[in-house]
Image (cartoon, rainbow, N blue to C red; front, side, top):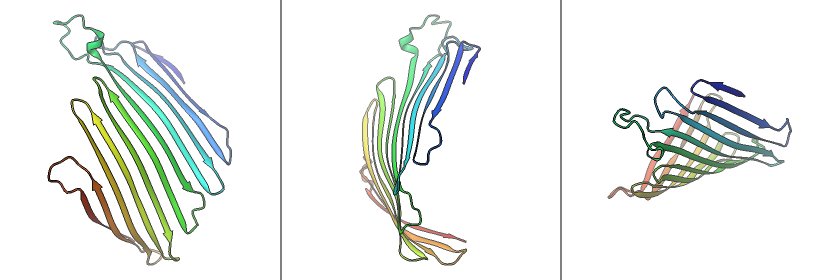
Length: 219
């Protein structure tokens, strides 16, 4: 896709993908959109994006992955243009950079006794002046068949986050969601279990371990 608009606004976007294949697919997404000027002085903006993604389908496992980078560029144009007719670019400039990386694995045969889907994720966000945050996150969803009517569910995850701007903070969160699934009848499904959460939060006198009931009925 190619375009051009007022305020000197070029637009470019492309999707590149492999042809259909029973074992794999991969592709690339590219985008640029910007305006040199705007209806207000120094109100130009810009967006640049690149993303790659791929899927591999093996005999027993399916592997998926993607990685992307997005940069959004802005200016602080809401100042008094009469008192400050000339503003330095460094005092106006602002950007937001975002990085995402994800890998996931799951079993291919969904009729097997044991099914799983697990993913590893990384997220980074950065901006001016010297502000940024990170997150590393692992997630699991799984079940094990006991018989035709019952199965054990085990979901969970681990998250580590840290943030820095005028101050710094970090936190680790561990989640576990064991439960029992029961197909009572063709129309009635019951899930019962417990949600366990542990967080080393910096709030003073706040309990780190939390237990919550997990229950649902579907009819």
